[in-house]
Image (cartoon, rainbow over all chains, first blue to last red; front, side, top):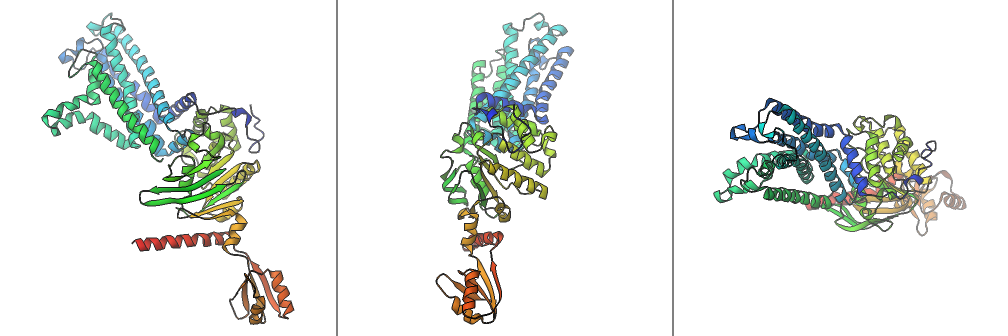
Length: 273
Length: 306
């Protein structure tokens, strides 16, 4: 392309053409950022490696979480482990954006994408795509293992696309990108990894157990509308309709994401960097 | 052309930049000078949309930076050479910037070569020296082959080799007709490269114009004369716009007359001159004089407030 012999005196103007900011370019950039920092791709792969490891052990051993309440008969029972992977993906989501703030590279990113919205959207898109694809592959892999192991009677010979299997696996798998996006929104909101992770564990992970003690009796059921409660409903895929059905759970989850993501976006647009 | 109009930035009670208006000429090297904390970085951050002005505007060719569809093709920015993820390699850092605007990978290799980082391009930037980080910052600024370069304190922390490299690089870029806008708190450094100067202190404009104009506006050249009859010479030198001060029994400091004029007048009056020397204010002294007023003013204000 360009002559490399002519150094600082002859910048390569021709090969830049009509270059401009584009959605595809922003996505490529985020893809590069994700895989070029070791801590980021390690936290990502760790989430899946750990989940696969624990699920495989469970499947081979034939033990199902919560088998005392009949969990052992649930065909997709192994997805009960997925929330552990989700936890790591929350942290990964937090890190993808807070690491930009802590290193100052956010300024480089926003000078390249000064409208800012594109940065948040492309980060969210890449995270969603990567965690959804890896989650789907993981679920297919574990389903195959389950069929080979044959340790769960109710799942024996059941197609992955059998409604009794499919919706549970889908619900469990979607927990993974949800966690990553939730972490991204929290990280963008607080711009500090420690604060965002503390908020997640303090409010969203432990909150449902702590808050009812402080709320008046009439309001205690509000914790049912926190994300983890809705996630449990979604993962159950209709087997449990307490305290509400899957449809409501999906709406609750999306509402949380829109609310937190919207606040993050609004602040990103307005705040100085 | 960079135009700042009544630019103001407040952080709560603190005013970082106040009613700042200036113009940076196209195709010239303009130094942005001020003591630490004068508001230089804040102004540059507002120029590239990182900080939002409280009021006023700062534009590039009439447009606000964040409205440009291809910002890096117009402006190359280095605000903080350390604003890089330390775990990412220089190559991937530059690639992630280049991809946002659709620049080809070859362009990344090209700028790496321009700044002499090709051999360490795959290494994590966390291990880079400050000088290498500055080079990487310059490479990032050059990615889009921009007309305008905005550099915040690019000389800071560089060793003499690095300073020389930077000076040569910037001179080269300026010769290609690019607008270079660089800040520094060192007048002597800017005077080696800048044609124009914008001097600010306490967030306010103190002086703007060519380097020569600014220096002579602060203190006109003065001439030291030592003679056998200072009193008589002082009388003979009087005129409009001329000031004569006596600094010793035989010594005068004259402003408003050149050494040549003084010599001629002395000859006409038959006064013997022992010494006749034009004293030019150094750039650093000129800068100190311009900023001292602003700083004194600021200190007084604080005392009043307390």
